[in-house]
Image 1 (tube, rainbow, N blue to C red):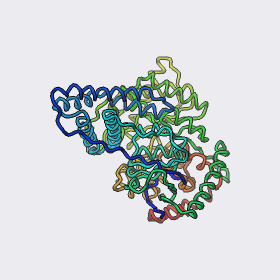
Image 2: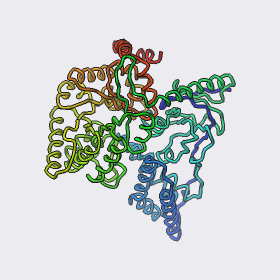
Image 3: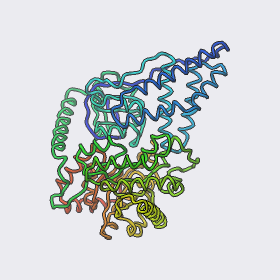
Image 4: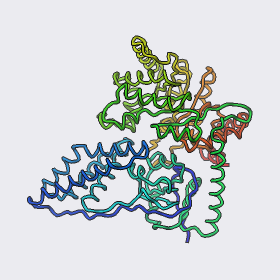
Length: 564
């Protein structure tokens, strides 16, 4: 008999496949105290497990930047002296190597998960993964193979760690079903990048499926169907075939310009954190980069990257773009993103604390190095600078002064750069929306960051599963804020783009087009569909549609209209 289970929609698609159930093997932990004579044996056992896992990571064939970054992060954690010292200290207190390891990992995970910080919660997941890998090595247990899956595999698990997602056989996996997680979880982002079906936050899906069971994921509706009957299976095979045909059509047209039926030209760009993202975006038809997240250059490093290191990274991007433009966002660290080599002060509300531009203003050398690197790279291609988390004219004036000072230093050193480089800001706080009319006088463009803007306007933590229903960009308050920002920029003869997750929601494309959005910057998988929606609508039709939605007072009412 068929069973239907609901989940949070993380990536929209239809998938039909066989279950690969990832249940972590339960390991019996030795609770008996060891003797003095056994201490060295258990220390050696732990150190061998540590070194063996390091060797496996070091010898793993790296296929992409994401995998490289995850492996480097795990190697860095394994080199953390606190991990080894804590485990060995516990062994010296006569705990077995497996007990000492699990207690240490549990302590680290509890501490990290208690923090009001999404980045640290993600690191907790990394430590769980590392602890499991080391425990399996100590106990001589083989891992489940994820790098060689059967075609049309639907992977079912409590959650996937960053390392697990980095080694998955991406050619054969067609969907993810997860007990845990939200829309911004690592698994969700991977699924969106791959363009595969994904439901998260399902609570008990791992208890309701078995290996090799047939499952349908309809993540447009937020459901999965376990053991579908023949009629349902045939219905979804037809739907999937239609979707595949549409995908083929979209792929054929992906390099076409996004021009409305009445001649309005819209820029469709991609968001990147590395070269792999850039290549995927261009392959999907992106006309440039609307957001280069530079924090990844800092997060997967063992120190602040130098001016020269950053210059080489930015230069490589503009050379690959070959005349297309890139918007480089200056360092947006803090909040949910921290650095392995720099200790941030403890904050009760890190999303409201010392992050982004606030951090950069206090870290003069770090900020100057980045600005100089961006300016130097601008001599090789079309670069725009974007400043995150600006809330006032005072901050804008200070940032522009810093940029001008760095320009002067480069000019004095006879180093080439684009003297007319454009500067814009991320609109991601209620303050920046309210004073948009003042800020627009200081910038060349706005780019709306809907992820933070939504959580700040709605006072709803986007990483909190308990209130995930409140975090909704279709809320009238958020939509009206977006409309205000676009209108302000147009009034002053300037333009507004969007680089938050909402830009990649193809159900919202017609609405945003009608609101007057000039540029969409989205994940690679969304780009062909965004272009198609734009090409099949006139701006005037979309404007009437958007005006109707902007009059609505309820999120539910808006979502019904969007789904028609």
